[in-house]
Amino acid sequence: MRPSDPVRTSDPTPHEAGKAGKPLRIGLLGRARAYLLAGILVTAPVAITLYLAWAVVDLIDNSVTKLLPEQYNPENYMPFSVPGLGVVIVIVTLTLIGAFTAGVIGRLVIRAGEGALARMPIIRSVYAATKQIMETVLANQSAAFREVVLLEYPRRGIWTLGFISGETHGELRNLTADDVVNVFVPTTPNPTSGFLLFVPRSELHVLEMTVEEGIKMVVSTGIVTPPERHPAEGRKVPQAQVLTRETAE
Image (cartoon, rainbow, N blue to C red):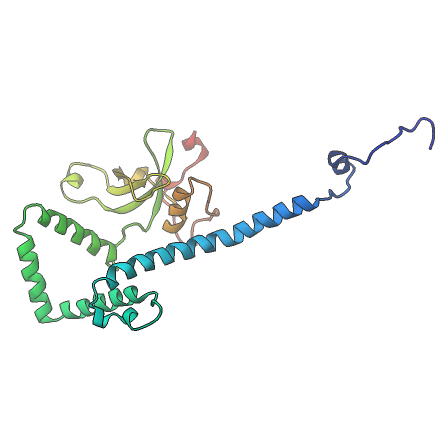
């Protein structure tokens, strides 16, 4: 060693090693922490999903099995409980009810029941609204919640995600000159609540993401972002739906 060379009394720091191009060495604690985080990322989604599924099944089982007579409850004859028994009973019961209402007698019974509910002042409104919503959502030809859109809300220059829930009809449609659609704007992180807006179609920008991806983005407060997609081949996006940098600014 020449006199002009500096005397090094310790090993190079990780910062110096990185500058020198040498690979950084991760200690035992660093590896353990990395493995711990990897284990959490792998097991947490599975554990949460299984827990929620088990909670729903257990809730249905506890609610349904209490309604069974003791002589028909298999848990009274077995040394262990049967998980999912309530779910099976609910599915079978709903299937039988659907088969019954498809016949002539079933339709007459349903018509008589709806006539009785129509005479009740408050209950008839709740029943009519619930029935209409269920028929709209479960109908195969329904176009509700099939498109994710970007719109300026609550003011110009601020953008938010929305879901087209249907076409605007009736009095609201007659009072507007534009082609207006119903847009549901969910709140974060609870997408079951939100705002119903009636927006001209020309002011909406239809996105390529699916409804499931849009809901994930809302629930995760923007942490989970779907990948960028180009418009599907053969699908032309109207000029009013193309969001340019000048429009955003």
